[in-house]
Length: 329
Image (cartoon, rainbow, N blue to C red; front, side, top):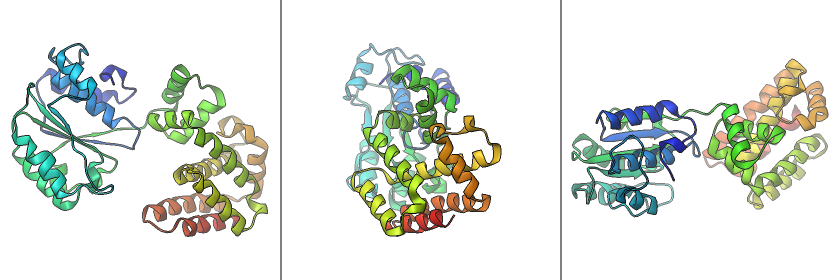
């Protein structure tokens, strides 16, 4: 963990945070929203460490007692608000770990900082409990709410927080980072950047994941042979993939990326625009046999499968409906 200088991208957010420190315009509550892996926690930690740094600059010095405490994970004035239930932050979590604790003054710093990860999991009662603190916070309090979906917050919470929305990085930035830090170049870097959609954390995960290398080969095999397999075979294949702990979202990303390539080649006939350049001949074959309407229906079916899985629809049913559309088109 380091300061702002180690953060890739998000320059506007970093500059806003630095200016708030530089001009002593610190808000009592912030919302950092963006996909998992985009750097919300890294930004929150850099901001917190800089606020608490004894040098009082716009970058943490890494040398003072406060910075060393932070880096060791033992700073007494930084509280990471955890929750007992896996998918819910309840009212008791907020009351006992934030509202009650916040009344105790900082131990050694000008600020006392609370970082709430996955803050979208707060129940309505928990949000209302937090609202009372945000409306009348102690002067030293700073609350950082990290979320993948700020739309799940009450309007009263949103209106009382400074909001920072993390944006995807350009593919060129992702590829450059993978090249310099991990030695990944060429078509592999193109693929990881395309799959990550500007999410650097996801790109790093893909580039270093053995599971993804397995998934790449297995899903590619499925896509290339989908017309020759019946639904029962396809479902067994998907079931085996998930039993090997391969991520269903990654499988759906893969399908989406494949048919995106089919569409792009059908429109442009330019293989240089493809993610799966090595599969040029198969992409060409799919493009010649699949209509524009068919490709559109498949891409819509992928989105529907994602929505069904998020709504806790049975995995087998969600994938069966998707595979039927893929076979028919």
